[in-house]
Length: 130
Image (cartoon, rainbow, N blue to C red):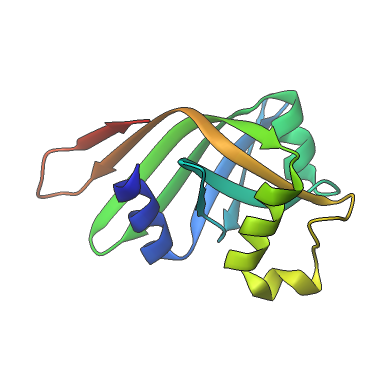
């Protein structure tokens, strides 16, 4: 899991894919955080991505960095605890102008049943299950 975290952190931007009905939706994200041995992402409950995850928590993440790319297929599980939200926002203080761990909008999810595949054109794929 640490290798996945390190890759996404170094890439800075990754793309999160969800579905809305039968339509795929992809958008850039930048939050990746380790908390209590799990990988977390963050969004706002008012956003369409939040509603898409609620309807179908299976997502895929993709990023490219240093000649390699990663795909992470997982389920996202909401963690409503203030401690989880605070930990995320403490790691990304620039988000505090938009979010607060005590508001009704801040939402954090951890990855469950995750399979990450790191690929390049010159190496065999590396598969990480967590």
